[in-house]
Length: 432
Length: 59
Image (cartoon, rainbow over all chains, first blue to last red; front, side, top):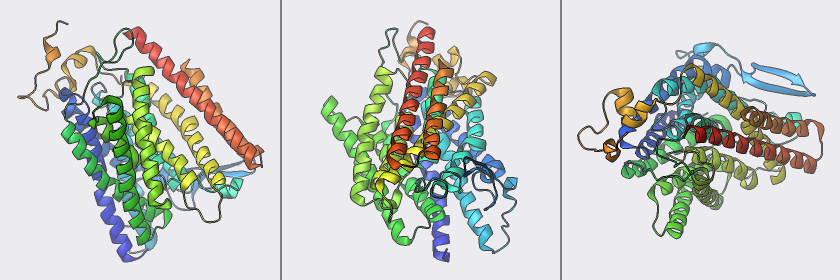
C-alpha cells in the first residue's frame, strides 16, 4: 500500500462514525419524543461497548494473526471458521514501522467502527421499549462473537472466501459489509423486535396497526446526509483493506454509493407519492439508507447504471417490506430497521452476484456463492443470534416494564426527558 | 414452534452446504441451495408467527 493510500484509509476510518451518527439521528427521530435521549444514549453506549470489545476480543476472532485460525477438515474441505490471535491486539506493535503491524492496525481501526455500526439496527427496532442494560448486554454479545464470526468468514479469510479452493466456486463477495455489518445487524434487529414485542398502543385487539409517527423528521433527513458521508468512508476503507482497491476504484465507490442511495430515495418518494398521494418522508429516508445498504455489497464491482438499479429495487423492496411487517406480520419495527438492514442487505448480496464485474467467472457461479453466503446468514447466524438474545432476555429482560411503557424510556431509565419544556404527550391525560 | 422454526433455519443451511459437498453439477447445486434458502424462509415465517401468537396473548 502506498503512503497516500494509507493516509486516505486512515482518513476514511475517521469518518466512519458519521454513519453511526446518521443512523442514530434517524432512529431517534423515527421514535417517540419521550424516548429520544434514551435512543441516542443507547447508540453511544453500543458504539463504546463495541469499540472496547472489538479491541479486547473481537479483532482476534475476526482477523487474528494471518495464517493462524480455528479450522477443521471435513468432507475433503478445509473449513476456516474463526480467527485466532492474541487478545487486546497484542501482536500489533504501534511503535514499529513494519507493514505487518500497519496492515493489522488499519484493519483494527476499521473494525471497531464496523462492529458499532452492526449494533445500530437493533437499537432502532427496539426503540421506545428496549431497556438500556439489555441493549448493552446484547451489543456485547454481538461485538464479542457474532459480528467477528461473520466478519472472519468474509474479510478474514474464512470459509466463505475459501469457496474457490474447496468447491470450485467464486469467493463470497461482500466488499462494504452488506452481510457482516448490515444483514447481521438487521437479523439481530428482527430478534429484538420479536422478543420485546410491539409498543403499547401499536396494535389493536383485532391486530390493526395504529400509526405512531416519528417525532422529528428533520433530524431523520439530516441523518441521511450524515450517513452518506460515513457510508462512503466505510466502503472506501473496506475496499482498500480487504479488496486491494485502487484510487480509480474509490472514485467508483463514491459514485455508486451516492447513486444507489439516490435511487432508493427517489423510488421510495415516487412509490409513496403514487400510493398515498403524498410522499412519505420517513419511508423515503428508509429508501435512502436501503440504497446505501444494498450498494455496499458490491461497491466498486458494479457499474453506475447497475448501482442505480440496485438502489431503486432496494427502495421499492423496503417500502413493501415495511408494510408487510406491520400489516400482515404485526411486527413493530419503529425505524424499519429489519427491512432496511436485513432485507436490503440480502438484496444487495444477490445483486452483487448478478451484476458484479468478475473477470473470467460466470454470473451463475457468482450468484450461487452469494446464495451460499445468504444461507449461512439465515441458517446459522440468525438462529445463533436469536438463541443468544432469548437467553439474555432470561438474564436481563429486554422489554421495559409497564411503567416505562407509559412514561417513556427517558423518564423511566434516565430520569429526565430529551425535551423537558416543550413537549406534551396527549396520552398522558388518558385514564390508565 | 420457535424451536421447530430454528431447526428449519439450520436445516436450510445444512441442505445448502450438503449440496456443495455432494453435488458437482452447477445446476443441481443451484437447485439445492435455493431449496435450502426456501426452507430458511419458511423457518423465518414460522418464527414470526410464533412471536405474533405470544404477543397476541399478551394483548
